[in-house]
Image (cartoon, rainbow, N blue to C red; front, side):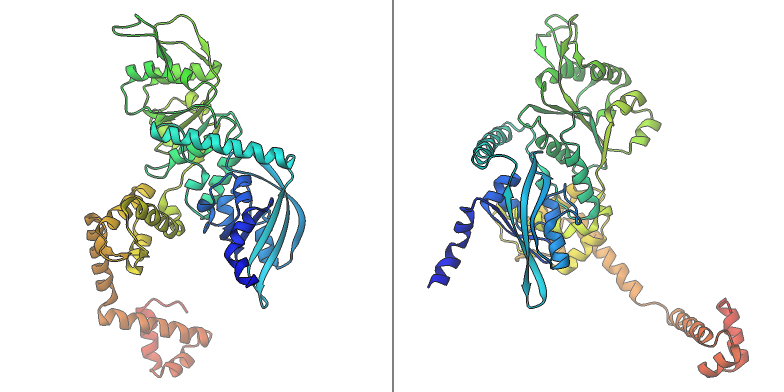
Length: 467
């Protein structure tokens, strides 16, 4: 009975312990995460469960993570001091005791108990609780207003080496005031990365303002960025620009290379001295704004095509981060697919369990020119059309179905080749093996193959086999 009561209440018991508790499986994926650990790491437990430990802690590596080291070696690590940066950008120092979980001689996971030694315990808990409540209210309000930075690093899905390094690099520069330029193809998630950097920075509670520079004509964009004074042009009123509104926080300029050279020069002046002059005004206003930008092309192409001034580019790209296209991280596709299935199950009221092997094989071979955005839309569309509890190729959007059918037809045709071609290939391989086995002795090779020596010489010449 005691054992039964313990099992029924174990999670509630662990949630009342004033230490962070992580349990991971042998592959490094989190299977349990108690309340104190969630408060310490500034992340929702639901976002952590099932994710790899390095995805949740991008500032760590396989070598610096005590959990991964214990899984690798099977040796406990006790009272080890470890520092990491959480998703709020805070540097947390913990005292960890990590113990392997074994079944016989096999390591099936590890449990880690972390004691926060960053601040006095009670004060630390109170501050974290207050910050969490404040951030929750701020994010809720921002979502309703359809503005503000609402994403963090947990929203950037991927466990591939390239994505883990990107998140680690981005987290490491979050505390810096230096400009950040994110570049990559459309649909790769550049804006998500910018949001995450802001939310992990000291400016996270200050304004985050985003502006797509390609969506507005230059004359209007200048007024929006720098503000106006009454009478500067017909209908002009005294209005602050985005630089003034973002004071103390972050201003994100998407597709900044779409600005005209003239407006780029004005932007550069603001960045050089942090002084803004409204359109038609004579006085300047000093602002403290971190600039983050994004472009949808390789920076070298932007410079070569002169769509971006070189002096502005060098000012904006002090920190440069590249969002890789999906075709460079195919190993992330299964993780992304499952993430989007869970997301749209909630939105659409569905209960899709997964995806058939044939559909997944197609996903792993398709080039995804629209990147993660295209994959998400494909999953959303398929879930609307799915008849069972799995996504099949027949449920995919029509353009993907057409490509799937064509690829399948090509594969069928490629499976059956002309008999002569196949026989010649096999014959060439057998002759090469025989020649290798005899050290190039034609007479002995002919005996092994049981054909005349002259016939073997002819075939060696026919297939261009080097002796």
